[in-house]
Amino acid sequence: MRAKKKYTFTPDYAVPPGATLQEVMTSLGMPQKELAVRTELTEQTLNRIFKGEQPISYTTANRLELVTGVPAGLWNNLEAQYREQLAKLEERRRFEADKEWLQTIPVKELIERGHVEPDDDKVNLIRKVLAFFGVCSVQAWQEVWAAPAVAARRSRCFESRPGDAAAWIRQGELQAQQIVCAPFDRDRFRSALKTIRSLTREEPAVFAPQMRQLCADAGVAVALVREMKKVPWNGATKWLSPDKVMILLSLRGKGEDKFWFSFFHEAGHVLKDNKKSLFINDESESDLLEQQADTFAAEKLIPSKHNARVSRCRSKQEIIDLANELGISPGIVAGRYQFLTGKWQRYKELIRPLQWTT
Image (cartoon, rainbow, N blue to C red; front, top):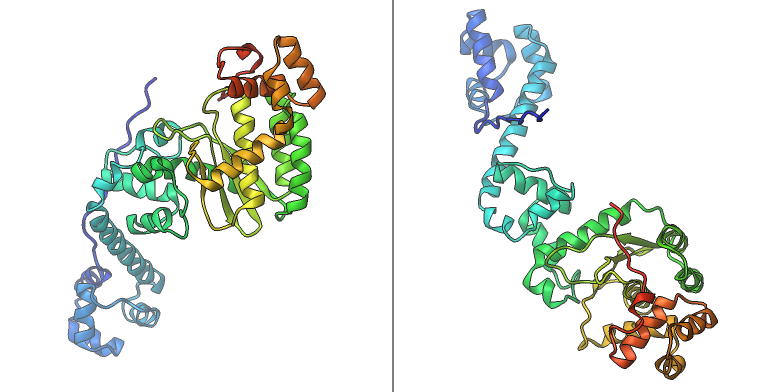
């Protein structure tokens, strides 16, 4: 059975409570001058209330209750509803000018992933997208995602497609916010990395929850978010607060070797770089800090002193034996072999593919 399409009505006007007051006056046969005397309000004040130019205060509502018999709560509610509707109309007017911005956001992907509800009304859709990003306006969105203090380190993708890039980062933030973490502890995180390195030998069902818990205990929230179509990133690092940092990972590349390299790359940023920048792993070779993070990851996984031995491996069994000796997944050794020799097809069967389960 097909779900019925929902239709919503959004009025483009606001009725001031003064209109209701005039109706009550008519029903009571009470002229404006008499109402002014009975409520101790001037006729000019009543005129402004009729037009919605002056709000009905709690004091005025109490006076109207005594004079008209209509409860003060009703007048207060009418006033609140009127002001709320005025605010919505003003917001809608502002959002009308932002429809072009909406085209820079991957709305379709966000809808498909359940982050934004579909809406045929573009203005309503803008509101839902802004709510997803946790901002109240497009200007605020620009401040959050374009301000140098927040995104000082951005990739070419962030520069050319900020909407797509920000959407991926935001999904990670929302996921990371749900992860309960202890206050960040640098030494504890260093210790956790040693344990996590040994977990590379396990299947995803085993290593994923353990890795995330070890990191959370050290103040690091590991978020796993499916890559966006136009965001070719492996990972990112962002401090959510002085005591909590997010490591955001995708499964771009699908292989376990790339996944683990990306994780330890981001771990390098956590341990070595400042807490103000947004670090993005887009495989840039021209950025010094990214190069340093690459070196950190490479040394943590397979110290460079073993590179010559890795390059000399002549069989799958040699790869497996070396991996056992190093206490690491054979797929990571195979990936290092491919990187060092340029023989990208050799031993690829040892590299376990990773895939999303949902």
